[in-house]
Amino acid sequence: DQQVKQNSPSLSVQEGRISILNCDYTNSMFDYFLWYKKYPAEGPTFLISISSIKDKNEDGRFTVFLNKSAKHLSLHIVPSQPGDSAVYFCAALYSGNTPLVFGKGTRLSVIA
Amino acid sequence: NAGVTQTPKFRVLKTGQSMTLLCAQDMNHEYMYWYRQDPGMGLRLIHYSVGEGTTAKGEVPDGYNVSRLKKQNFLLGLESAAPSQTSVYFCASRRTPGTRIGYTFGSGTRLTVV
Image (cartoon, rainbow over all chains, first blue to last red; front, side, top):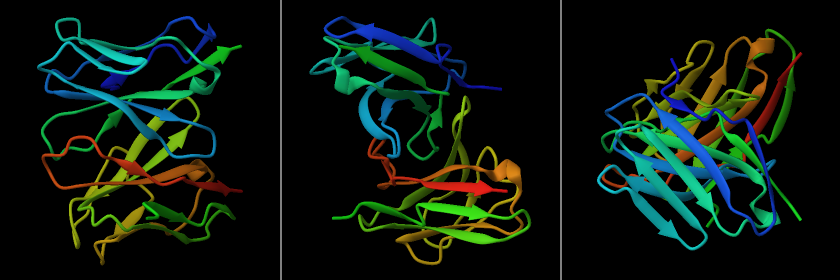
């Protein structure tokens, strides 16, 4: 049973436009959510996170929104750049000790 | 500062052979993890460790064993490799509880079992 779901395997966006990547979760115990970015032949790298007590967190071009009632979060990238082309993983955890649970990932392609 | 180092980077095994994947971190992190990444499956947790001498099963532990004899090293063993274990394996580490971010990943080991 998948606890973190990324239902869009891929997304294609033009350079300069907004990219919106979505993630849904089923476990109400999750209280911290993270986005990781992965380039080919590299390990995932941390991008941005949000605690369940917030509904928005911004870091430069990246903003994560959390809707707890819908168990949904999204990552907005504005403006999108070709270097943003990568696989993005949504991840979640509860308490400080549990391992991260990852979604299947969404491959973002930003077209120049 | 090397971070998390995985060796080897690539390996081809025959069915039934055994091997050990090594993960080493130089950040004095307490927690270490082994994930596998398969097309369309995302990152799935195999085993993890919350400190030296401890190990615990993750989501897909069958066919794998692990050891954490030293704090800085986390070994993943395949006793009898199967084609279903063809995957990219990632090791990660993070600091002590209370730090919810800070997973550092290695660059991966691509394993092919023929």
